[in-house]
Length: 224
Image 1 (cartoon, rainbow, N blue to C red):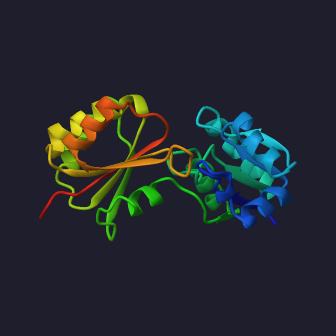
Image 2: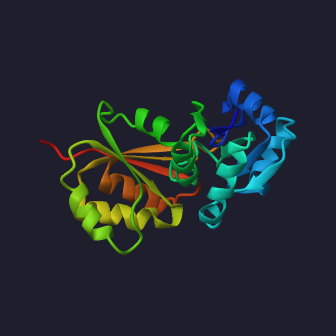
């Protein structure tokens, strides 16, 4: 039976992979990986010898149709990203949509994703939240900030380490210096760190100690 598995991989600590994920990766016909060099290390660690192909943002538009046809012919594929759950700020949506439209069975395994632990350990309300991912780099960035400035739900934003201080400065401009935020970096890794406080307090921390690694920022919503 044709099938696409979306398989989450650890965001840092290899022990966070599930038994089921390992089983699926061993049993499918092929694995589609965002970066085969990076994923190769993971597969080698867990003695997974399934053939692997590249599937990333630069080639997915060209390969989706062919992959769907192969699945319709009976082959099974697992899609993994470099870390976390596929399609969450990573490739995966285009292939998933194409499979659904073509009648290929799609199954997403539960597993690691960076924003959940960042949100839960932030200490900010998490009964309602909005996931923004990466904000636009230039075009549309200011417009997006004007919308988010009125957002009352907790916001989840991904930020590159070299853009963190600039982004926190923009938070001060659009959200106010006293808006409560939480910055988590290197989640599940040796140097995991979460810094909580006002925009000004957190910015001062990272101006004194520049951030490294993968970063998730949680922003309190506008007070009603």
